[in-house]
Length: 314
Ligand SMILES: Cc1cc2nc3c(=O)[nH]c(=O)nc-3n(C[C@H](O)[C@H](O)[C@H](O)COP(=O)(O)OP(=O)(O)OC[C@H]3O[C@@H](n4cnc5c(N)ncnc54)[C@H](O)[C@@H]3O)c2cc1C
Ligand code: SF4
Image: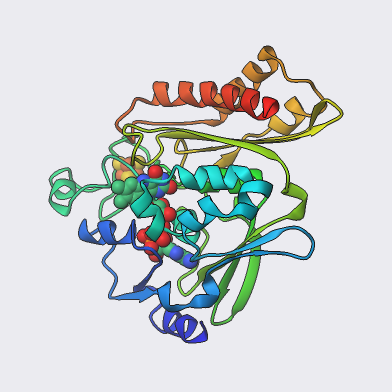
């Protein structure tokens, strides 16, 4: 591990880490990333594994595969929303390779960006790579490429934290502080830094959880809209609840006001509908994918409502 961090320090700025490689390799083939050095994390055993903490929380190594997270008895029992979200990523083969660290650090996606070099060149490139204009929001200076990982909305609902390491030391931040909200420079990770661990607090254990996603092909595709919901019951009412969304903004987000709206109430159709409306207001999809922004936003509303009803009835 120390050797890896020293290598990252030495080649910072021109190095990419490879975890499962399921997103990195296709991106390198499309010349979206052209690093001089690739550091393979698969030979670092300390980055793998799911460990229960003495206080009842959990620690997950960044190189733990999505398949391990999907199948972990401990996570399925105590943090079911995370296992469910992991089980919807890509396909079984990709989940055997893909890791939780790679899913958290996943590059943002756009119709105009995830293309071959020839295709992008023919369109005059764009702000995210090699150009200075945005085809999605012409005239603007911001990139709206969409964060499209499935596990981060579940992790946000669980108030997860991550550890970031470099040769200079380690720091620990909440996952919600990791994303910038920009489509191009989407994460707060400096050159030479590595995500090493994910922490799930004991206080989030035992919440009922549901994850729902919209995609073109149910067997493999990235989400085009995704909603995670967690609910804790207390005396026949909702004691606490959180809603996270993905694939409709440049960052995965917690829905502001969802906890206040749902806590202390008994669930009925009108309340679930109001939660759906709130989630839809947080979503800001643009024409970055094959499905229309209107449809994706509407599906956030529908999924949030259904997920709240399902989590409350679980
Ligand atoms: C056909 C197809 C379908 C897909 N469908 C989905 C889907 O439905 N949902 C979904 O969420 N994803 C999907 N993916 C993307 C990908 O498979 C997953 O997101 C996976 O979790 C990525 O993990 P990885 O370990 O393979 O990451 P890698 O490809 O190894 O890395 C991804 C990025 O994260 C960086 N990185 C990796 N680990 C770390 C770390 N520890 N610290 C710092 N940076 C790191 C890499 O440098 C790279 O920039 C799909 C990919 C393909 C090819
Ligand atoms: S949102 Fe605009 S700048 Fe960003 S990748 Fe798409 S076209 Fe490029």
